Image 1 (cartoon, rainbow, N blue to C red):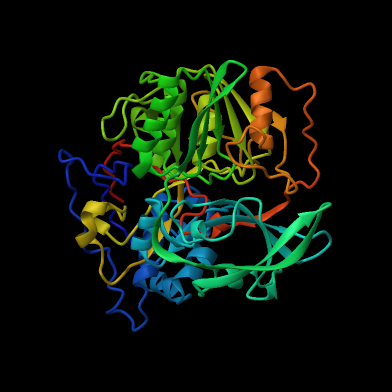
Image 2: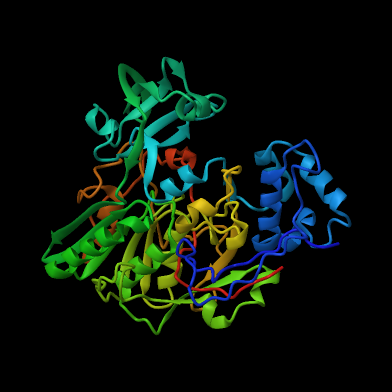
Length: 497
């Protein structure tokens, strides 16, 4: 049977996959493409787009029987398969995903998804974690930080505050998703406090409203700390958002001008994002060594053999995408604060730097997401790869996007096996009874890093009274979640299936 996708990857360049003008355009074969509307009254346009894309690009394509190249003997059999689930979301999750895939996802609106990757979302600006009361299904929340210039920033709520209910209803495992992440843009949090390791309601209420197009600068805190004559840079970086790479570079310019000799990189709440931003951050820490390998990409069995080795290799960088020279510190050691909420592009920094410098990981084991993804939309002539310059080429009848894992990044030593997470060198949980103020010298994780830098720790007490036992966090209910998307300018060869 003929395969149903004649894919043309037009010099896919994985910075939102821009196309090279010198690439040969291979004509799309019209014959194999099924007419999903004429054949049947059931519209399977979205399912067809999903299967085509997953059959070619999905990292575990060979492990999913439904994605097999010889899965369907006739066009009728293929069409019946597409019709077997009329909900495209269920079709993607239940028919196309590998059982061990924890991270691939879909979006019904590619425009909302791509805006989220730019740091723009509908949000009240409150970032929080959720945990369980002991021996109970009851849930409580604790505030991690507040996004500046957000709705929450103007309210009486801050890091270290607690809440146990929404609109007077106590939170539990069965209702927290609907109450906190449901359709209601406005809700009232029932606040609580902690005393003697016990969380109790206070009767205080805080009403928050989610607002459209809130932009979060991921460079949350960048400051120079002077401790015992040493200048220590502290950077809290909360997502790898390439629209803010210049801000990141400016922060390192401040560090460099101040004569910083040590860096504490706070990625404790950073779920990932742009691979290119990960390369830039690592280069700012280590150096602009464009002859040294930062990562090598590995694709599925079908695609790997099609690529030249050079097209799979990414080196450290010396400039941003705006051609600004990188401000680099040239460090041989970096202290990274990382937790179970640290994922994907954050883990890539740790793993990518590890062969070159001493990476001291303070905190807890990370998420363990070592695969990357690309945004796909219904644009056959561009191999279904999303390109913002081709908005008018996307099928207007199909607004869906999928964000499947299509490859795995390994460091220069060939290591990528950290699906169980990266274990800390110094195990230290966040303490609910003492979350501290981010960037303050007494905040426990930062304090521990400084003690390691200065060597002064003998009399310090780092006992954790009430360790965080995370169920989930607010970032896991955003469009981007803990995604790592490949956006390196690295043209791939033309592929025709």
